[in-house]
Image (cartoon, rainbow, N blue to C red; front, side):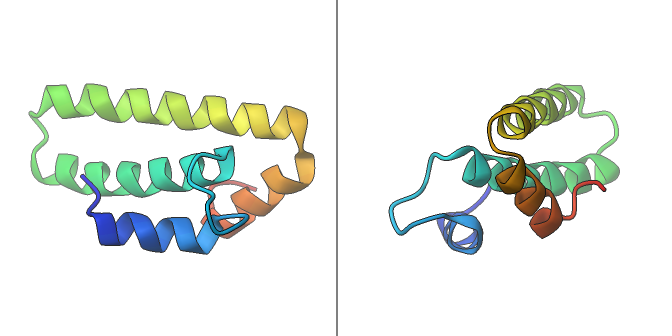
Length: 88
């Protein structure tokens, strides 16, 4: 789980405007941070199958948000990918 402070930092780094908390850009950034933290947890606890399932759901959700961004606004998609260092 991300703390409120960690979420605020992630949102501040990627937000398009001050009140931006729900844009696909922000959602991808938050999901990426959660995925990183959960991956660390799963390296320590490899038998935690329930958390692994949650991780897979988050990865799928992030992928769908990225697909949406790619189809609707290619520049924002490329900016998010570059800023988060996901691929390319």
